[in-house]
Length: 331
Image 1 (cartoon, rainbow, N blue to C red):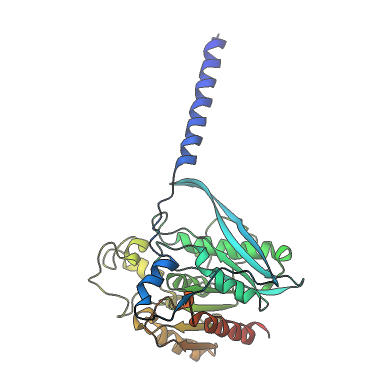
Image 2 (image 1 turned 180 degrees about the vertical axis):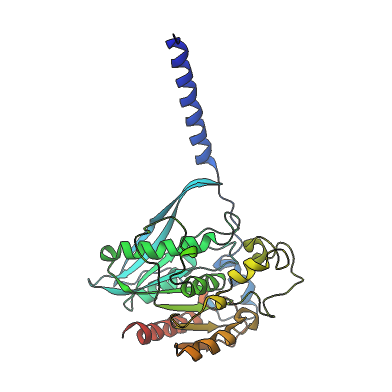
């Protein structure tokens, strides 16, 4: 017969270990690169463009806000369990509105959803529900984790459409720089089961109806993007888990142009004066024209990559997005 005293001791020891593990998990910090901020971009470009001013987080009077809303819970990651969040901005007037999921940039390694807030607030004031999304960066998880996160966020938007006044049939996605690449890949893989991931509202579709790519690459294999002499710590190499020589199939898989087809949604391209961020764009537009799918292109000639973060370009960026969405969603 087992000794009941020893059994109690064993249970207490097990409980202590579980508590210790939980405590340790709470203390685990996800590694972050904090170098990409509005302040650092401002400092970098001010000497070339002394008239620029950062766009501010300033809530319009006719807009509601819901910040740090959990859209999915990640379990058993290398850094423990953790939640992913969105910031939502919506018109105060009740109704159903087109929605825009907004993806920040930062080389898949840095940045956060706050970078999208000034544009999100301006667009919400014009009659959109805008959703700034947090996703896993490369120091936490490699490709394709971010795509799974973003698809999950779109499904969450549909699952909560009534709560936030979203027209579930009119959901677009935008992204800036690396976020533009993610937006393109998300939108051009509509209906591809392998790109869905496994967390969050799987009963709802993640398809989107329009894409806005703001200075984001569409083809990692294009000559202006595929620089074979890149350093091992280059942002794309880190995110894709290796160089083109090491992981050619991954580089192609992450290139949205190879997922385009005759059912792809319309696309707006907003470009800076740096050609390398538009790698593969002309070829993709040619394909879309063949299929009769609407595309629109606008270029800011100034050589400032993060133009959307600053006046005088942020308002024009918002105008282009608004006009495009009116054309392609209000039909």
